[in-house]
Structures are given as C-alpha cells and as structure tokens.
Length: 394
Length: 102
Image (cartoon, rainbow over all chains, first blue to last red; front, side, top):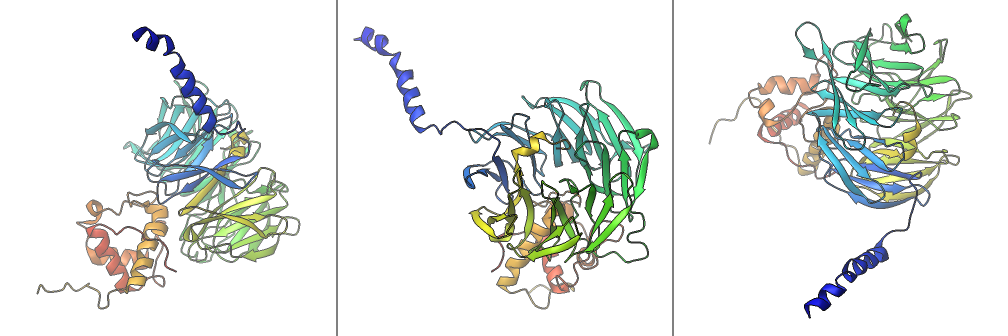
C-alpha cells in the first residue's frame, strides 16, 4: 500500500497546479492598470482603464492620508507611500503585497530612478530622502536634509527624478533646493541651491530640464534650469500677489502632476483664486486666469489642449476646465463632494476623478465632459496610472 | 456636580453637526495633520501631543490660525463652541470618522 501512495504522490502537485489554473485570471499586460487610494481604510484598488473596472482590493497599507504612488519601469509593481512612513510594493497582476517597509515616521511620496533600479522616498520625519533597491526594498542610501549648524533636519517636498539617476527636491524649513546624484547609490553626492521661502511642492518639466518650486512663505516661485545649474535659482512670477492679502489656504496646492501644456506652465497660485500661466524658457507671465476658488491640482490633459483644475476646501466639489489656446475657462461642473484628485488616461480620452465624500470615482469623457460611469471606492483620494512609469519626475 | 470650566461650550453640537465636525477634522485637517492625527506638514494632534497644552490657546489656533505657518483660520467654518468641542475631543482621543453627513 505504502509503495502505491509513494508511486502516485507525484500526481498531487499536478492536480493542485491544474485546479490553480482553472481559477487563474487570463494573462494581461499592465499598460492600462492603475491604483486608487482608499485613504480612510488603508486599502488600494487595482483598476484597469480599458474596461473601466476594479480588478482587486489590497489591504494593510497603513495610514494613506496623502498617499502617493509610483511604478516600476515594467509597469507591474506599484510603490505606495503612506503618511506613516510605510512603503509598500504591490504586484498589480496578482494584487498582492510583495514587499513592505516602514522607512520613516512621516512620508510624503517618492520617485523611481531613470534606470528603474532605485525607488526614493521623501520624508517629513525624519526629514530627508531614502533610496531603496526597487526589487528588494533594501535600503541603499539615506540622505538626511540637514541644515544650519545644529543638525536640524528639514521636511522634504517636491521630489522628482532627473536624468542621470539624480533626484531633485526642496527643503520646506531650509529654503533650499537640493540635487542628489545617486548614480553610485553607496556614495550619494548632493548639490545645494538657495531658494525662496518655504517651498511647499514642485514640478519638473517633462524633459527633466526645469524644476519649479512653489513658495508658501512669499509670492513667486523658484526655478532652477538643470542644463545651466551654475546660474542658480531664479524667482519667477515675483509680483503676482504683491501688496495683496493672501487668503487662508485650506489645502496646499500640488504642482507635481505636469501642468505643462502648449509651451507654458499652468500653476496654482497660493492663497488666491487664480491659475498662473508662464511661458517656458522666457519665464514671462502670460496670463492669470481667475478661477472659482483656490486651485489644488492644475492638470494638463495629455495633449496639452486643456487644463483641468480642482479646488481646496470648502469649494472642493467643483472642477473647472481651461482652454490652453485662449487661456479662458470653458467649463465648470460638480462631479461630486470633496474632489481630491484626477488622473487622465494615457492618451487622454477619459479622466478619473475621486469624490471622497461620495465614496466614488467618477469617470468623464474629456471631449464631451459628460460622465461615462462611476466606480464605488471608500473615501478615494489619489488615482495613479501605470503610464507614470515612463515619465521623468515620477 | 463638578464646576464646568470657563471654556466649556454653552451649546453642544447636534449629532448631525458632530458627524460633520469629526469628518472635517479627520479628513480636511488630516490633509496636513494625518488621518490618524500623527502629523504631517502640521504637527501631531494626538492625545499625547495635546494633553498638556492650554485649551484656550488651542481654540484660538483653530479659529485664528497661526500666522507665518500654513495653519489657516477656521473662523467662519466652525464657531467658537465647536472649536472648543473639537479641542476637548482631541485631548481625550478623537472619535472615528463615520463619513460625510448627507
């Protein structure tokens, strides 16, 4: 009898394998996948944009207030940065957590290196950046944002990756922009540039050339030309709010998200109901577009023809659309309560909009600006598609 | 009956308003202070962080903001009694968000 059991034991794994095949989802690519953050429950949804559906929910990601996501260069893995310092690597194809480290006390996002080998976190507490092996999440570099003579560390904002496996970021408390070269991650080299007061976020242009940091502590923005870094940081739009009392800011504007369209940068004014427009290169002010309230995200449609804007509390149920040819508003509408984020599909035919207080993601046709469908989501905030994997700055 | 402290609200918020206030603090204050109130751009608002802080100065911070920092004034969004109610709840452990009021 025993010899029979041993003889036929090889069947067991075959049977298990066959039954596993029966329930396995069909093969798929990752180019139309993405992540929706469900901020209140510490979960994410894996979604796909072709059929506009939710594929899976992944839980156990910690405090996801202000969570953000970047992607591996093959578009398979999402790196989710939680507020509580958690960095979680999610496999989009199996909808499983394949790595997780709590790497800081308080984190605000990250970026992936040009060669795809490093994932870098920007941290508030302790202030600085940390680089991890993108495969294993092993710590490979820790670069504290120290300033002054007392060893204080600044909160880091506006992190973006640059060509050459470099990373650029701003120091909220130290009024500086820094560039850290991680081409040899065991030996990071950092350059420091004095910037304006209290940078709160930043963007890098799609070609990786210009870095623009918004300032909380003064009017204007700080710009560094990375092709001519020796020229240092220039102030752009220095006079846009001069002599006026800024309004209270209930949500910091977000610059990271490529509001670069038609050769111009579209930027949220801080403390004002305006979108500011500057010409790339000359950095001359082209327009100030009055909008409904204080803009938070000013996002260019992928073709650059329109810019879509959402707003700070308490006017955060609104969206407005700016035509970049005329620099005029062409639409205002209310997709839901507490619109926290929006993300365009890679070619821009649709936009996904998170309505936190309605527990839904609304999907709009960008040509008709009519709603196509809705997906339920618990307190959704950030929406991130894998097309970000191929953009400099993310 | 113990003497009520001077800052105690004259009128406690109604249940629907309580739900709104909890949602406001967790979600909108949470943008800077974290959903779990462990801090972010703004400082932590945990029991441990606030226990020793004078209540009237915390109420003043909610209503008037803190000039020179990103903390905005919430006067006009919450009234003084509501700010006092929020401070008391923060100092004893803030309630869980039950979602937006309808």
